[in-house]
Length: 365
Image (cartoon, rainbow, N blue to C red; front, top):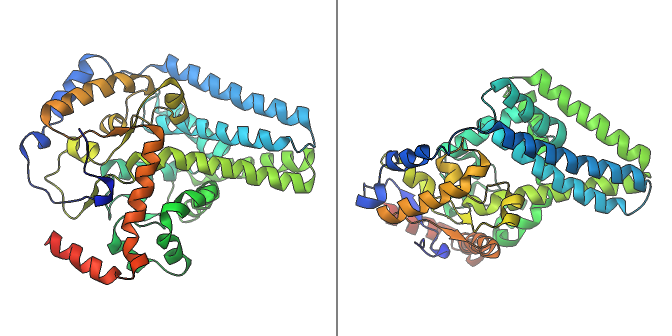
C-alpha cells in the first residue's frame, strides 16, 4: 500500500487505536520465528568478515603497489567504500545479530567502528538503540536531534547562523554536506569519550589513536604531502557520502512522530516510519541489508541474510492488517527524501515560518 504523498509531511501525534492498522506484532513475530529467521548463523558472518577483510587487503595491496601516484585517489575511493562495508559489521554486531558471544560481538564492533572507521562503538550502540525505540520522533530520535536539517518547521527557531542557510536549501545541502559525515562521526567519537559517555573510554581512545597513527604514517610516508592530504580528503568524503546514502532513505520523508504516543504499537511505530528500497543482488550488497529497513526495525537482531524472507512475510501481514508498507526503487527513495526536505523548509523561503508553526499547532490541537 502507498503512504500519503511525501510532500504532505505527515505527522503522527498521539493517534488512537485504528482497527487493522493497530494490529498486534505478536502474530507476525510468530510467523517469523516459525521459519527460524531469528536464529543466528555465525558461518554467514564469518564469510562476510572474510569478504570485507579481502576487500580492504586488496586496497592496501594497490596502495603499496602504486606508490606516490595520483592514481591513489582511485584507491582512496575504494577504501572509502570498504569503510562503508565495514560499518555493516559493527552495525550487526551491535544488534547482536552475529554471534551469541557478547565478547565476540563487542570485539567485532570495536574493531570495525573505532579502528577501521574512527567511530565510537560505545556511543553508537546507545545512540542507535534510542533511534530504534523511537524512529522519526522529533524529540526522542537522536538521529533527528543531531541534524542541522529540520524535519518539522517547529524546529527552525532553534537553528542559528549558517544553520539557517543550510535549512533554507536543505533539499540540496543535506546531500552535499554528507562529504563531512565521516569527520563529524570522528568528532562525535572524541567528544563522547571525553565527556564520559562511553563504557570503555580507555579501549576506545587507544583504538582511535592507533588508527590515526597508522593511517597518517602510511599516507605521509608513501605519498607526497599534497597527495597525502588529497587521499585523506577523498577517502573520508567517499566514506561520509556512503554513510549518508545508506541512512538517508531509511526514514527521511516518512511519517514524523511527535508528542505522547503510547497508543502506537511496535508494528505501526516501525512500519509507518520506515522505507524499503526495492531489493536486488547489487542493492542488497551496497546497503548491507539495510534496504530492508522495515524488517530491520521490526526485528533488529535478525541476521542480514534472513531479511529478504522476512520482507515477504511482513508485506503479506501488513496487507492483511491494512498497515501501509512503503517500498520504492533506488532513485525514487532519494527523490522522496529531497522532496520532503524541500517541502518542510518552504516556509523559510517564503518568510512565513511563524504563521506556519501556528497553523500546524492549531491542526494538532
